[in-house]
Length: 462
Image: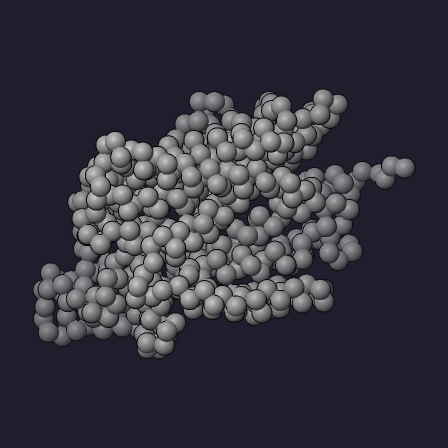
């Protein structure tokens, strides 16, 4: 963000110019003896000439390539490589966490346990939209009304990191947040396609048929007990990526269709996919271990290409966006989740209402998808800038989540492991039966590997 404000031209040149041409922009300036300011201006002009309004997103780049307007090498900017290719790996690792949580003895198993976070997902979309429309009607400007879709999606990368910091990577609240965030990002992308259609690049729904062979290939590999994760991702994932890409939808979600087919640990029997195998030898675990380092390292570049928002156009619209994200997400997620509990769909074991409130707060982190929607919702550069600043300010949701954890003394995995009191069971929550409440709470607070080991060690009872 500092770079984008101090030297916006060079920032745009690095992020949005095709990678093989980045050096030539500055070489050209040096050969002609241009001073720094002129070189920066030249970099900006060259980048913009190649890509149009590249500062908002790589959408035009990828759509032009998908439509055959130039080779892919012309559009391989750093922005495109990170947001459309690298983020597919990130979403794949996130899908692995959700898949593992849905396995027997996981936080979201049986499937009925996933209904509560899906209710929360709906609340996480409806709440921000309701807050935005209400506040804009009372305090805002009619020119801002098209920004209703900006606060609908959660930034998965940031929210996941914050939740792992607050509660520990294996806490059920993290799986709850991941399912919620992936689902509402998918809804957010649907809102972009339907609510903000681009007449130059209309959504090509028929091209989604390319995802079908990708899913069938992954299913076939699973049915044939293929234990190597690479063909699932390289073949099945490639078909799904191209289907989303050519349909003019965000291809970062491609691996979400494939990862659930990777064989994982069979926790209900205490055995893994291969008899006697190490717990980390399942393809699902190997996939994460192979990519986790790459994903963690790549998040630096993700922040580099997405956080470059210029200060300057802060207005009432900025505060409207941040209020819709933080207030709307917290109230929507919490309220709809409590409604699901009333309907008989409890929170995951080990997760109480205090965890739910903090999760709702953290889900207010809206950056990447929100920044993208800003460019779709407004044609005015001043309105785009103001809305984007509101999306950036939503990082305050992380501080609110931390404040709730400390103020309400919400236990995380590290707290329960050290012997502090576990989160009290809510009436109607999973595992709330009086005769088994204590044991269930303890089991739910253990990491998944420890629970699997307990199953292995426990003698079979007649």
